[in-house]
Length: 90
Image (cartoon, rainbow, N blue to C red):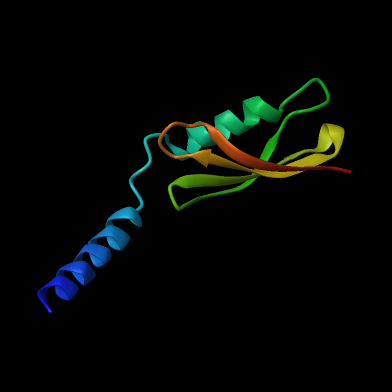
């Protein structure tokens, strides 16, 4: 019985310690700047449509009307690296 209780407690602590969202090291405006620099080019500049902080990363929706391009980038809240992005060109 003691082994089962200890096992359940260990699983409980592992689940809840890994699910916490740490406060981001970079600010929302820094995340916007990272995305703007990545997608601004000679065809146009990037406009940030929306930004939110979820699961330790910024979700940044952007648009560049100059080359009919838009997408979503996921910026790590700790390192500022773009983890993954989605892009569509008209």
